[in-house]
Image 1 (cartoon, helix red, strand yellow):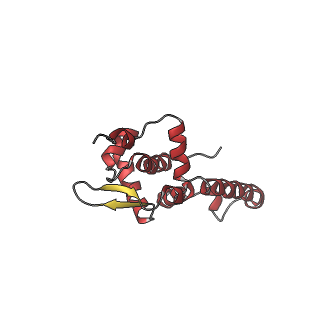
Image 2 (tube, one colour):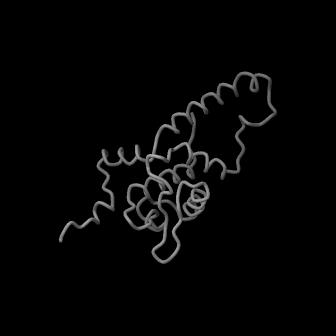
Image 3 (cartoon, helix red, strand yellow):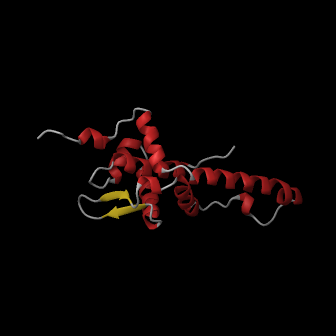
Length: 151
C-alpha cells in the first residue's frame, strides 16, 4: 500500500489550517501547533519550504506568520507532495538504477504508473476542495468564530 509520511501529512494539514482559519491576519505557527498538534520541529521546516516553493507567503514582524501565496483554488495537494518529497532524504527504491531484471522491467514500471496516476489525482484536489470538506464535516473555522457583526 502507498504510505504517506508524517512530514507530508503535517504539511497538508498545515496548509489546510492556514487556508481554513486565516482571516485578515497571518496565521502563526504556534496557532497551527495548538489546533493540529503538529510538532514544531516538523512544522517550521515544512512551512519554510512551502514559502520557498510559492505555496505560502511568510509575513515578518510581531503579528507575522503565514498566509497562502495564492487563492485556495489555485493550490493543489500535488504541489505540497512534491515540496515534501524534495525535502525527504530517503531514496525511492523505484528510482534506483540497479536491481533484478524482473524488478526493472515489470515491477517498477507498474509502480511508477501507479505513482503517476496518484499524482494526477492529487493535482486535481485543491485546498479549496479540502476547505469545503472541512466545512461539510462540521469543523468550525476560528476565523468565522472571531467575526463580530455588531455595530
